[in-house]
Length: 119
Image (cartoon, rainbow, N blue to C red):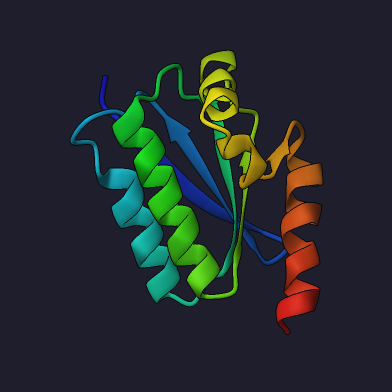
């Protein structure tokens, strides 16, 4: 299954919707975020509701994306991670660096909170 990635802007926050497996050699998500950062977007919600599987390579990409966003004074909120993804975030302690939201409005508000700090 290939990865499908779409983006939309909601209240100044880019919501990135992902569908598919984030695993070894799948670099489309990282490239997508790189392009968005080049367009001067800084605050993101990453919707993982349709990501049934992620491996260590995919987790590494999330950390790289998070680091790139942080270096630009931005914020990344994870939205609706599946049970598998949430479990991996917990056992790797990555849930301590990634804010997680269960509703889109909550995620957008959380990302916008950093807009006030950055500006």
